[in-house]
Length: 232
Image 1 (cartoon, rainbow, N blue to C red):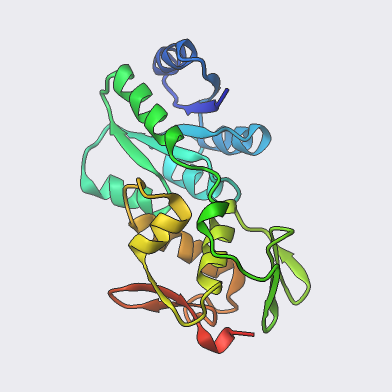
Image 2 (image 1 turned 135 degrees about the vertical axis):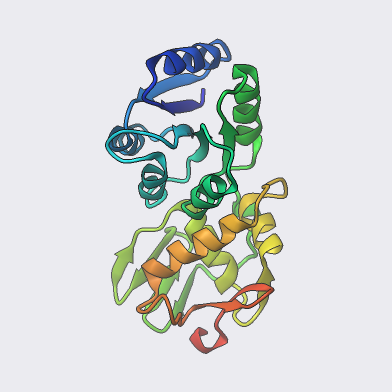
């Protein structure tokens, strides 16, 4: 059974959503503020998080940003406002989908089910590559699902590792955002902006200077490539 975390400071809404989800067979966890959302995610590893933007402690956007540092759980954000800026801000920190209040609980359940049907195990989408590859100070160990820089292990989420593996398998080859979505997220993923978010997060972890990347290069107007200069 999939586990879903519902985060909102309105107890009536939590009770309503929890009831609908439990009737569909989901295990439901709850939290009422931003810090608790991060803590519960770290401790319980939910498959999907329903996250309100307006939260005490810190808001849902900050909670989403922190969660994306260690979790690939699907994140459905709730907002009382329909302005485009909410969507832009949320997507910039890695949210997967949006629902504007007030909403139908049945629509929420339908969104949850649709998101959970998206492929989660994506190893079959990656080309065959040597188990261990070295690019200067960076080593990628596919068998151990691990990367190191100068011998120090760098913690990546599953999506970040998949993105890095896909790009580095073909140094110099330009991947469009759509191609990366297909290989890393699956054909039915809805918004290619999420690629930019994950590339930015990956650069923060592997690049000495993310503003002037050595490994993951931007090809303006097209997509990204693994620098041929970094090839082993």
